[in-house]
Image (cartoon, rainbow, N blue to C red; front, side, top):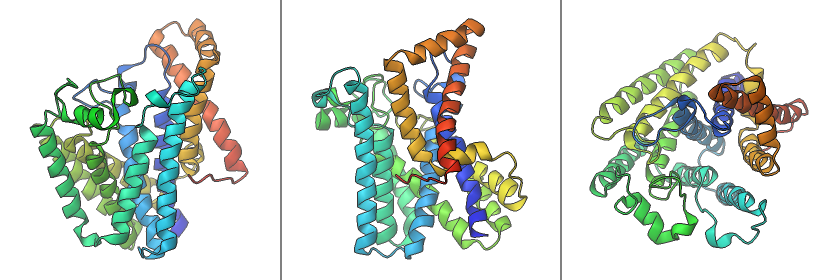
Length: 357
């Protein structure tokens, strides 16, 4: 029964990672819903990364509860080692993007932040919170972090699309330098200050993990997640009137809205899969779910490699010859790339190889 209760979490993780690969790998002109919102607002694409962080929060609780949240040297070493590993992998991806073009010594302009680095920091901070802090204060901590971050945004022009006045951009610029930052927008979307609200995001997932563990029946778990999800969506919607939804700065309303939607989807999947045992359709996403981070990393490296050697363009041109509409051709290419990574994951899945990063 224990594994059954976790199966829906694997499926949600798989749906999320497959979605991350899909939206990251369109070619040419993509549908708007498969692109991130340019500033305020939210598209379906803006859901995939926050869903992953939410799931990571749940997983943190379910993993650390096995050690009864005792901060033993062994547990702390494991947390620190994984945090450093995830951050290093993120740096390696950024380095590989330059190195494959011959710029092996790109350290003077290597981007410090990216998706894996944010995952690393959030995992490390939330895990240490779980080991050293009283869990009864988790909602207080989440609220406190969001209030602090809201104050930073409001007092520091956090919503300004101008890096010269936006506090988030200025902190990164002054601490790390222009050459080490993201240059396709006014702020680095995975920058340092935004980690504050991202940690609150993962803590919300952690709280849901606690609810899942403490509720006795699957029905009770579903209800608890549904209630949290409904509250999150409503609170995020109401807060968006003063603090608009914004993925680029990871706004407080964005945290509440996306965590709420993730909780609702997890409740639905738990009902369908764990309660009703409707699992016939789950294999595709289970393949992604059991090797989630490994397949995400491989997809990033593979996209860089295939793009650099011309394979991506060749495949896209072949697709475009059959599918003239640019947006549909881009979508077809993205689906092809998801299936390519599924093939890699399926080999691991059949051999029961689970790579834990």
